[in-house]
Amino acid sequence: RRKLFYLLPAMLTLAGFLPGGLPGFSPPSAQAAPPVTAQVNISGSAFLPATLTVPVGSTVNWTNNDAIPHTVTSNDNLFDSGFLLPGAAFNRIFNQSGTFQYFCQIHALMTGRIIVEANAVPPTVTTNVADNIAATSARLSGNLTSLGSATTANVSFQWGLSSGNYANETPVQSMSVPGSFSANLNGLSSNTTYYFRAKAAGDGTSFGVERSFTILAAA
Picture (tube, rainbow, N blue to C red):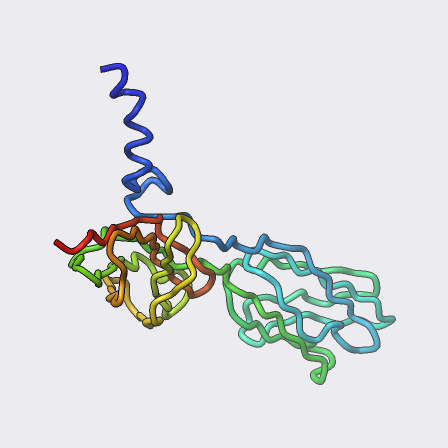
């Protein structure tokens, strides 16, 4: 019983159950961009920069470095600094993605915009056990479990003759909803073990765990 207890983690790892906590799952590769604090200078009756791009959750500070008052007023009334006297400042945290246009109520030709980008979330994918294994062919299958933050994901299988070394990739399939996908391998050699994993690319790339199958010698 003790030997079985110590061998169980290794057996689960080989079966593809431990990595990522799910069968056939490998954690995505991309990470979300952290929020930042960005500065817009008001100078020469202009917003500098006129266009600023930041990740979700970022803080934007406006400082009036002019000798006259200005305002920072959004076109859709989401925010308004009121009158900013020379040297005064105004800030806002942007917790939603989108494009936010603004202007100065005193000087209508002064305009600017803040582009808030959503954090990229990679798709997730699992690798299933190969089936339909014949003398020279096999079928690979996987599941796209999430699109992440993208509207589509390109899925495929990487495969090769040694563990962790994938010299080949199946044709890419585009998916707009989560679900299963598969690909057939042909022209395989007998007495050979093949290694493969599922791949999904969208707003980042993720992989399923590696699995393997063996083409047996013809009877």
